[in-house]
Image (tube, rainbow, N blue to C red; front, side, top):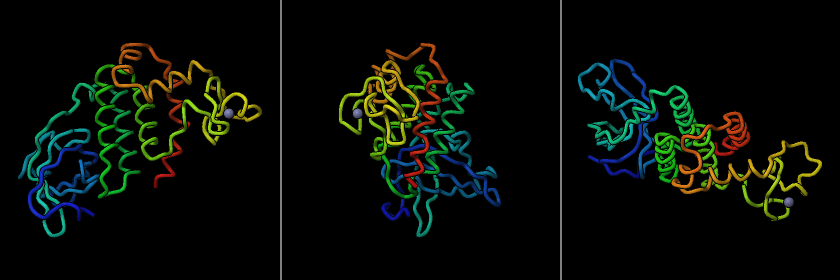
Length: 238
Ligand SMILES: [Zn+2]
């Protein structure tokens, strides 16, 4: 599954998704790497302390991973930590969000297949949280943009039934419908104000998102329920 990587030494940037202490003090790490996607990497003896990586092999730590590819497996030689989001980890609400994204990535990314766009999205959205964007807003952005990169995200600007612009609209199984097309459907109502917020959080530039949301009190319920509406779409991935 890592056939794309040449045998021998290679250095790739990425993030630790999972860390499993295996038998006899060996560590197995599930790394999400640039140009390689998610891959399992062995660190023999690391959990016993023979080779020490310290906090560099904890989930959510970003860095350059220096690897050796043998005939059958990848081995971790060393890590240059670039960003451990230490301040984020101290906030339980934020940490929980990041770990939820981490487990979504473990579940839905295809092992051994590069997903650089999603890797970059994971990094940049984590940075937005670090700069004070509320977790619910960051979560919506992360989920919607990931789905959008797969062609699965509902349009936030255009009605899929008539092609007209969305204003006040309704959540339906077929996405967001304009008030005309959604009339009579049982889906929840999304007023224009909420639609505009979702659209900005999803598609705005990082500076627009920071300017609108940083340090502002947000209705967590609104963001959580919006995320819950698109979360089932990930089941279409795999
Ligand atoms: Zn319509």
